[in-house]
Picture 1 (cartoon, chains in turn purple, cyan):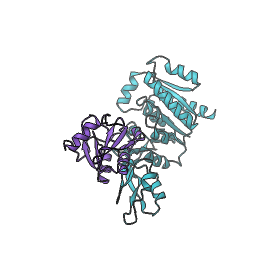
Picture 2 (spheres, rainbow over the protein chains, first blue to last red):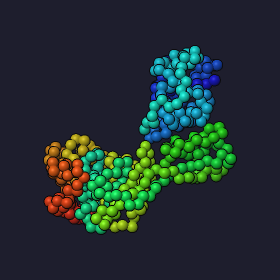
Picture 3 (cartoon, helix red, strand yellow):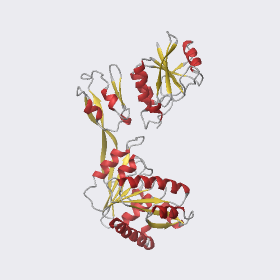
Picture 4 (cartoon, chains in turn purple, yellow):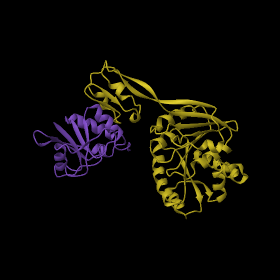
Length: 120
Length: 277
């Protein structure tokens, strides 16, 4: 399976970006092959007037990821990711490598509703 | 003549100026375009006599016709529609009602349905009409409501438009089509900063404009200096007068007093002169 993680950089040493819709990048990681399969540049959504969460959901769905990890998810992001049947996990800010290890160990919390109100 | 009263910075006195200008101009109509927090009616004691519901159009997808091609999501500039494998999700509160998704859908699977965003209240003040736009709480789509509010008044000749603060879409929608724009400011660094932004916006619209300094005498000559450099006419200076604040806090119109009535009548004459230039 592939998982997408919001991040401030483009490598496994980068840190998780706690903002989902307005994160700088998404690293798409292939669990079976144990490597980064894609880096999604989310710059367009960082300063989007609105709908950052919905558009980021679409980008992640397009990448083939079936789970996503970030800090916080707004209501539109939550609704969008659900529409794509993408599993949603919340993590503290740490390196992407640590996040992946925690995900594999089943240590991350599954998110069942929006964690923050909508942001403009 | 349509006069729009805008400001940039909030709380400089748009409603003070527009309600009092409305009070001194015969056969005029007052439109409160500050639809997120309309308050002009408080000073005009205007009780709604009629209410009109305002809607914007959002897409409705006929799933039996849709093949999830994703064109609707691609053409949406506002990320208001998502296309998943077997379903299309609409985010009504993000939709600007532009109709692109409906237009571009190759299978005609999208139709448009109304979504209520607010109300227009019609009331009277001294036999003159007062129109108030009121956006539903939590709603972000002010421009469509402002547009419909102004369309209701197209036939009237003397109109005062009380604009929202700021320099974004709702303000531009409010001043669009006006014959003259008044920018109300105050002599503070914040007032000047936001005035500069508002001037940039109004210049783009090519509508003639002038400035009113409210609370004049409060903070030196920074507004005068700025207006001098840019050759912007100062239409009026409203003194920093405690009596005005007291009257305003009680919901009174200052032009009920002869001194201010004369001041605002002269303001109207000055606007007409500036407009002729």
